[in-house]
Amino acid sequence: MPPMVIPDKCDGCQGEGEPLCEQVCPGDLMMLDRSVNKAVCRNVGDCWDCMSCTKACPRQAIQTRLQYQVAFFPGKLIPLVGTHSVTWTLIDCRGNVERFVMKTLAGDEEEE
Ligand code: SF4
Ligand code: SF4
Image 1 (cartoon, rainbow, N blue to C red):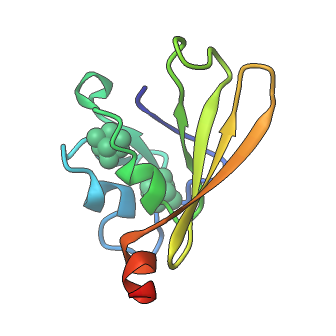
Image 2: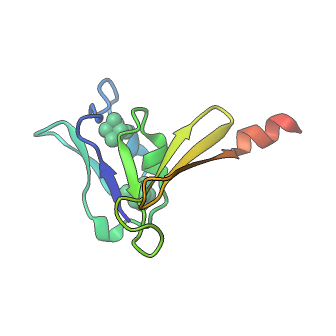
């Protein structure tokens, strides 16, 4: 499912020359709607759910809605990126919440 920008949380990456979600999208899909200073996905049909934009957003302003086969609305997956790990919050269709901590490559390298 394409990224969903939460308008109240997105500040347009003030101070950045280019919004962080736009910088990391491999498909060049994220852009700033300058009329409202909020990010948008310019072509949701081309998004392949890599979640780079979701993880890069410093304000947790982008959520990934889960496909109905997985969780139905309002299931969603929210990453919180730390220095050495990403904490994933999974909210299923009944509102149950589970969290998973995944080490990143930086976390693995530190252990070696
Ligand atoms: S999920 Fe990936 S492909 Fe889709 S808009 Fe975000 S960064 Fe781009
Ligand atoms: S990275 Fe987050 S805060 Fe920055 S423009 Fe994108 S959605 Fe908005």
